[in-house]
Length: 109
Image (cartoon, rainbow, N blue to C red; front, top):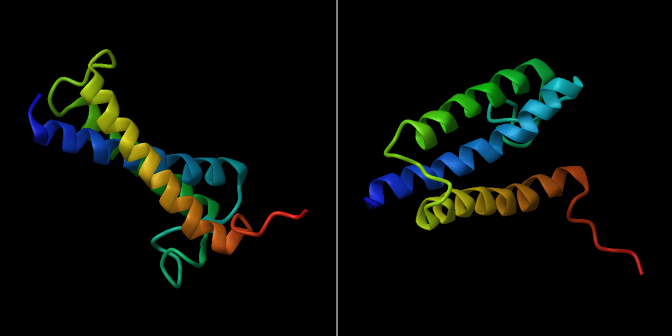
């Protein structure tokens, strides 16, 4: 497998994972942080903006994973690249958005 394909799958995984919270917030009718808020990534955007942003991420993720190379769920390097993108963006989002949503609060004894 060519490394540009693996790089595409990595970023595709990150973008697909990023689509989830935005789509969920949009579907639930709740505001959530987005790059379009003020300040970007910290303030809240409307549920409509999040639904659009989540769908856009879904489309980009599709193209990065399904239209670049020949992604195969049975090919370990393909799955590792996709999973690494998902895992790393999940860790970043947990740390970044946890500051605003109480996710980094210390545990009670």
